[in-house]
Amino acid sequence: MSDLLSRTHAIALDAADPLRAFRREFLIPRHGSGEQTYFVGNSLGLQPRGAQGAVQEVMKQWADLAVEGHFTGPTQWLSYHRLVSAQLASVVGALPSEVVAMNTLSVNLHLMMVSFYRPSAQRPVILMEAGAFPTDRHAVEAQIRFHGFDPADCLVEVQPDEPNGTISLAAIEKAISQHGPRLALVLWPGVQYRTGQVFDLRAITGFARLHGARVGFDLAHSVGNVPLQLHDIAPDFAVWCHYKYLNSGPGAVAGAFVHERHHRDTTLPRFAGWWGHEEATRFQMAPEFRPAVGAEGWQLSNPPILGLAPLRASLDLFERAGMDALRAKSEALTGRLDALVRQRLPQVLEVITPSETERRGCQLSLRVAGGRSQGRALFEYLQSVGVLGDWREPDVIRISPTPLYNRYVDLHHFVEEVEAWAGL
Ligand SMILES: *Cc1c(COP(=O)(O)O)cnc(C)c1O
Image (cartoon, rainbow, N blue to C red; front, side, top):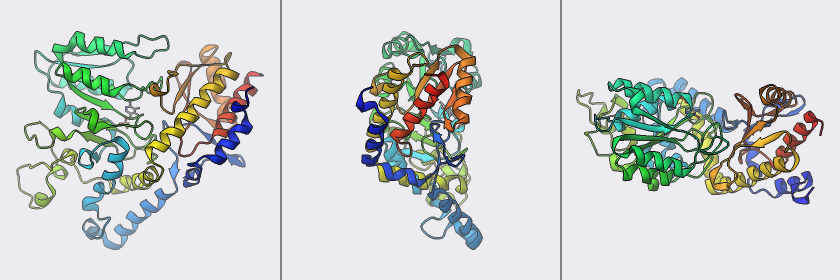
């Protein structure tokens, strides 16, 4: 075994890790008398220690101030959603006015499609990946039907063309140019949830806009995972959730991005609500809708303040750590996991996530040799020893080391337990 891939070396890497202190900012679930080895930040991120305090602060404002909490002090509820804008914008590479925390992901996807999927008889098509996360497929199909079109004709799905179910950029480009004149919208994920593949969003946006299509991204698995430059890449919109890599709790308030070029366009149809009305005149309660300039103008309701509070705690950690440092550690963690699996577990696990650093984020998707029954057996064994990954049918275990709270030595715990299970 090469020294660089030894457990001893991992311990040294942890000791020298500039981000090592962030692990202490999280509540790590217990396993027996120790801690779980938690690799499921792609599904539900761990609770930041600051989250309780942020929620308690709102509970106290409510107790002490009641309705006056809307208008009192720096964390007043009237503008509470704006407390996260700058930090969130920096995580996704946007202007603060381009992002808003509101609703949940699927709701935001529908709201964005109301504005940016405007099918005509000549241009009715939405292009997406085959094998997309189900909610995206459901939302797209529903939108096509809502406009009186037929998904059989108006939904184009790009099939994986690479051996492990990943999709080449060439295949995406080909599909976009093939359907170009009929494309109303290209909807694409930043990171594919099943394979862990990271897509070249800049290139995809370029192809789509070249053909006159609108572009939207589902960044559920990208936000807080890989660096994003939404303003520069300039899709029309993006949506994401905050409970995965953003560690803001189950069902946390989600996020949306609307590019600056649309901010003053009052001709865009939208499903309006009073919280999207410009703030200065909102409480005049006039009948006509005058949207706030920016992504905030897509809000409907006054937001669930208790649901937003943990996001503040989480974003403070992202600001302190910095996305560049997080990405550097993430590349090292996931690169090491990839090397360990290939070196020590080739008979047991096959890495299906692309091996190029720029085509993957935290997550490695690992296909278990022997199919579903072996896969389930290994998955359940790992759970029983406190190593948490997640399972995707029919035979894939997803392991997502996250740079805020995972250690290099955690990777060795995983590999050693797989060896123990396989009798290696
Ligand atoms: C997690 C995830 C969702 C979840 O949608 P919710 O509305 O938050 O339940 C949607 N799309 C993708 C790609 C996801 O990974």
